[in-house]
Image (tube, rainbow, N blue to C red; front, side, top):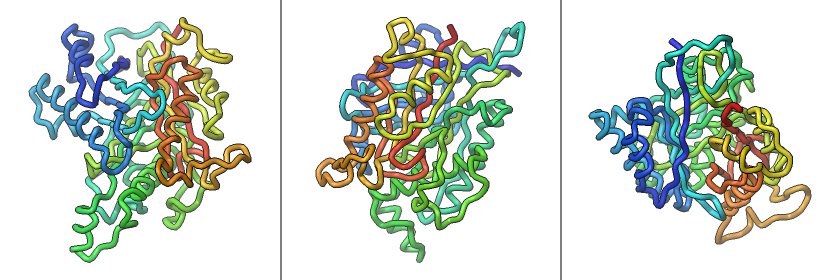
Length: 368
């Protein structure tokens, strides 16, 4: 059966603000059962104790639960909730709602349009986070999501977002009580290990790499995906995978595209992602072109040597802020091209999410 895949972007006055989603549902724009994924930028600190993420997750989940009469755990299994903390700089808190329903019409000719799907891993044990098991579970979920999205050609996969767990003191202690060691006992660094293992899972699931050596996880900066990123949080212990691309089995009004970011000031990489989605751009988008952009999703990593184009930065040496300004940099970069501060930007210490010091940009653009 063919699908109709579309999306909506809503602003948020706080992590618990679901009013604009409620308004869309009240107007009958779509049914709550048709929501596949919600990707949200919340205004917390983006670290282990960022409780804006689980707050937003719970509010959106409970709204869908109420509207569908489904228990919360069923909604969690059916919908990918990607809550990414940190709106440093000019990033505007917002959520992108991805909706899918059965298509009622068959196009006159096959056209590749936006398609997406989700898949979940099983619950990870604390000692499995950041390990080969973590990587392979995500890779399998990526393959499943691609199959569910009916994207036949790997070249048509343009973005994979993984929501993954992190370690807390309780989780580390629980593993220790069973005689198991976790990949780190530093809860903050566990975010990087989880994101890195998830990113390698994306690369493996999309055949960007053929296999992995466990010793390469978060050590070998030469292996990475250029089509996705991951965001860790305390609100889950499995990995939720959301994959989007283009398929002839979809009748969407949107098209997806992506491009690698060579570093954190690679504006041309953002422009090429938009062009890959069918939107020509030089400089910043004009108002008409801007109205065609559902959203741009960016992921970048702090350069491990602290250098950007040969110049020293303080991203790794600022003891107060550390990597948090990285999101402000990436957010400003994307917003300056798109002309909209309500964009998705995730950045920090990590591996395997694009080249070291760089990342990926993906765009979803309405067909002209």
